[in-house]
Length: 368
Image (cartoon, rainbow, N blue to C red; front, side, top):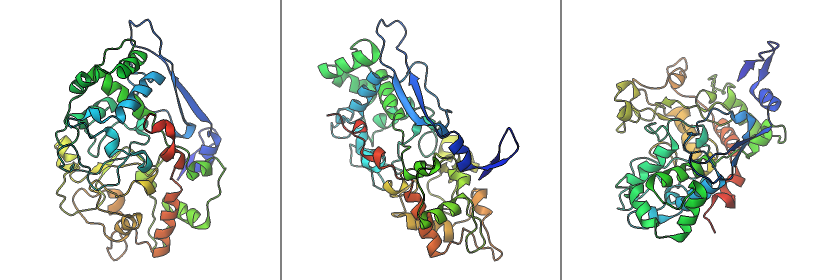
């Protein structure tokens, strides 16, 4: 993946451009609700410059250390569910990059959810949340599973009533918002603040981008294929159409050829546009080795099954992504048509995206 240097017209590689701007950015977000005499401590969002700063933090919900502390406590508290047994962390486990390892999660009524639980990593840069993009803010995203009868089945306002007698939560709320009043709105805002801090950017791939890691031969071959080299079949792989940028995602919705006639209409359920049938949000590939099973319905248990799909089992449909439908050989076979070694090489590269620090950072785990 190449681009032109804006100054000299010299063509430089994606990695070269990253090396030129590889410093870690420190964004300090400091504020407190208007009318308060207290000033909360700013929370320093640390992320690599190559992640970019195209994200949205609402003016009425700036990120503070105290707000994140409250949000973290709430994230791991099953009191937010109607039966007192299900927390946000039940479906978003840190060691699995804040997914849960199940095809479908189970809520308070033991009825499984409709879709696979998505990773919460790097949602600071995502504007359309859930597989169908129906939510446009982390505040809204945080409230939906609490309200859902098959997930937590308890609106935030009811959770607030349950938590109000807690002196611990009163103190956390006073630190975060200036007084000890616990409300549903504050619960949602605190959860969103915590989720915005779930930044994963310390994988071997990041060290490669900054010149501090040399990929092993298989990893390098897989990286080259991922970035656009031809497979032995002559097909150009180029996974960056959908997983471009160092964040390994592009905020688009695509039908990736899972079914000829999908039973789950995906984004069409939200937009009511038949052109969106079978389209789902492109998830990040960061920590992909930790987030099995894969796809919106968790149908693939392994990365090899995912590669087999894109290589050999694409299903045609009216809304199939053009990036995939264009991958057709002279005989009309669809897919990337990878051989076994190439599949293994791409998987080796995908393991470079595992950020073990993110998966084990105690600051992101349950409060002690």
